Amino acid sequence: MTSRIGHLPPGEELTDPKTFFALHSTIDAPPEPPADARGAAPARALALAEIGSRPPGGYSAPARTEPSDREDPSKGSPRSPASHAAAAALEAEIDRCTSRQHVARLAVHLARAYAPAAALFQVHRGVIERTRSEGSAINGEELLFPADAPSLFADVAASGESFRGAPPEGAFEKRVLQVLGRQHVREIVVLPIAIRGRVVSLLYADNGPEVLADASVAALAAVCARVSSAYERLILERKAG
Image (tube, rainbow, N blue to C red; front, side, top):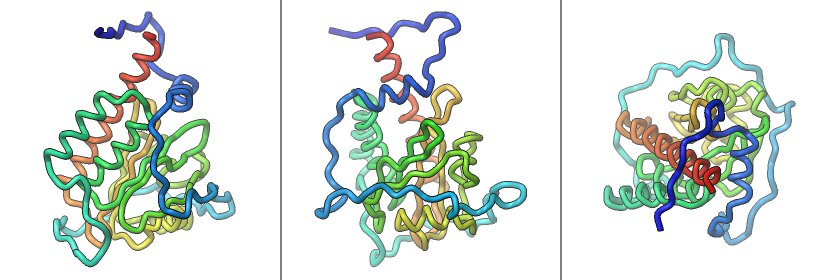
């Protein structure tokens, strides 16, 4: 049987915070494996006292050196998936996912086709929370912080504009990267995932001691677009059902 998605009535928005949160919290997803054999660590919320002030003029990406595709085999774990065919299979699976949690898990795995480390953050109810991450040195500790506190992540969530450049020198960003286990990376990218203009998630990625290749950043942006489409499809299906 083929399900059909009808058009929304005039004046009705596709989603809102309540609808999106309901989608996230009520649809069952396959259980995710623990980050390590020790089990999940307790959530760590960054205190406001740890948050530094936003630099004058906001955040801007500093000049980068020429991108490099070089990899140091002595640092970190191999990228995954390892082939174009595997990446294409993940893209197809995202397109037919039936839960937001499953989309998030596959999205981070797909992002690692283009960067050794990636993390997905949920933006909801004034909080930015890391929901999934993979890659060398990234730990399994939970991480959440206020969406209205001065930070690079909050700026991307509020503006919908991507950031690419050296990690900011702010105390808050340093703290977030430390919790992620990525405090010594050379360049980061933070990309918004939006549904009809509303930022609902952020995708973080880095290339360890090397800068990110332009092609990798473009591919990561394509991952965000695919995730956005998957989220929109799930919301429409939920409304139609």
